[in-house]
Amino acid sequence: MVTMNRNKVVIVGTGQVGATAAFAIVTHGLCNELVLIDHFAAKAVGESHDLDDGSEFQDRHVKVRTGDYADCSDADIVVITVGRKPPANSTRLAELGFTVGLVGDVVDHVMASGFDGVIVMVSNPVDVMAWYAWKRSGLPRTQVLGTGTALDTSRLKTIIGEETGLDPRNVGGFVMGEHGDSQFAAWSTVSLGGKPFARFLADNQDRFASVSTAEIEEKTRMRGNEIVAAKGGTNFGIASTVAGIVQTILWDERRIVPVSTLLDGEYGEHDVFLGVPTELRANGANEIVELDLTDEEHAKLHHSAELVRSYCEGLI
Ligand SMILES: NC(=O)C1=CN([C@@H]2O[C@H](COP(=O)(O)OP(=O)(O)OC[C@H]3O[C@@H](n4cnc5c(N)ncnc54)[C@H](O)[C@@H]3O)[C@@H](O)[C@H]2O)C=CC1
Ligand SMILES: CC(=O)C(=O)O
Image: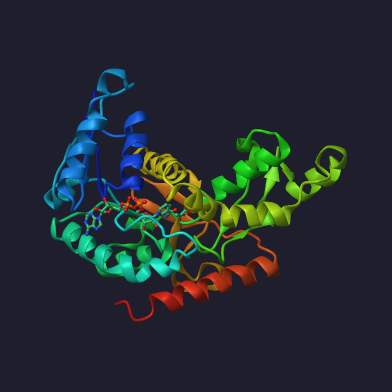
């Protein structure tokens, strides 16, 4: 028997990030229906028509249209990308004052529709905003997640690829903690071609003598800021990340992705959302993988947790 797989994604905020994420979802043919909402309604209309106009040349037709919050009632996923382009020479945490009111308003409207799917938070500061959306929505922890350090992990792999000349997809491991300046590369988890990365470098000193883990980590941390300084925002990396997360959830792929999720005792932390490896299923963020971090890595995760929690204080 053929069963109808009818799935629907809503993106709220069709600025640079939301529109590019929509394009990634369309080009990958991830869902049947994609609905765009923006408080600047004409922008959402323009983006939806522009996206739909390529239908002839897409592998699968994703119906793109504008809508309103009533469309969230039967949506599988709502992606929240409201905010503003990141100011240069600032931090993501500094965006809190600008973003929190917008996100609160969006979450209230989404929940008023009767939504019972998964919220994917993108707006910065993403760990604080994911925690806030979880608290404000009343949804179970599985159903609210942020993009977390998924983008930073992809950046780390890309930069290792640049430094070694190898395909970044050969790299395993995670950037963890805050999607922000306190993030860290959990080097004890990073491998290349199945070998611990430090061992890989040591065994290939003739080829990779100039490669430094400290430099790679700093480049990863600064990558977003550099792109913002160069072009006024970032959109392609985060759009691929959003599409990857949406695919994993909609297709119940059970990939392990370092999304921002609630720590409830894992890694000794409570009541905080941070980027940690998490199994994604059709119902959202499931089991957190508790890695054997070194004492130094644990301390860095704890530092991120304290920082993010301090920004959540007083929001609810
Ligand atoms: N988590 C991550 O890794 C990343 C997060 N971001 C964040 O994504 C957010 C958006 O960035 P951009 O798209 O570059 O900004 P943008 O200024 O291009 O777009 C923001 C959009 O949100 C809309 N908007 C604002 N308030 C709204 C509301 N209440 N309801 C509906 N729509 C509303 C605006 O009309 C605009 O179209 C920022 O917070 C940025 O920091 C950006 C890149 C990566
Ligand atoms: C802007 C931002 O958060 C990023 O590209 O990492």
